[in-house]
Image (tube, rainbow, N blue to C red; front, side, top):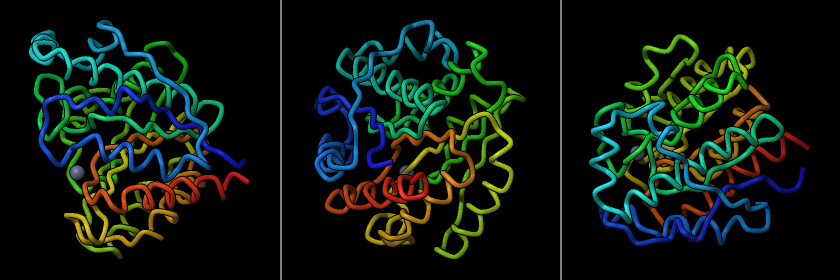
Length: 251
Ligand SMILES: [Zn+2]
């Protein structure tokens, strides 16, 4: 495989109200860096009934009060759903923003509005396309929103990598993926804020290559969804490492 299907839309560059560090530049830097190894596919926004799979009516209404935010958030969720559907045939990366893993059933925060990952998995389950799923969250921060949504669903296993050193990260990742092959799909919430020059100060660029190959070796029905990562200058390179790790193991 030479290229990886990547969900992307120029509409993710919309400058909706958020904090400065979660800027449109993040997505644009990644897009331009990976364009030679990515086959871009354009997502559709998710629907209100999709959102109801994971979120309360009051949370949906609150987000909908700011149209630019709502439009971006339903497009990101639709993008993650598209990535999960694609992953049934080939690996896929959702290059989306806003991120989602801090959005729970009835709360959100940390630059997240709707939970892209949880919506992607719940959508496949709702259509009986899969019977179970493993979600692994490798972002620096705890995927509290994802945990909140999936904890009562026995079909979904959620594992969060909470390491504070490079060695511990890879040990925890190996453990998290130890039985990944027994699930119908593997979704990875990818945050690059574990990067050595980012907030986490742990992983080197090449390490994301290893992460990519570990994920795809664990389960070939793999989709990754972008969460955090704020050292914008190297965000594209780190994503490239991740994706080439996935592609190399596929070839
Ligand atoms: Zn994070």
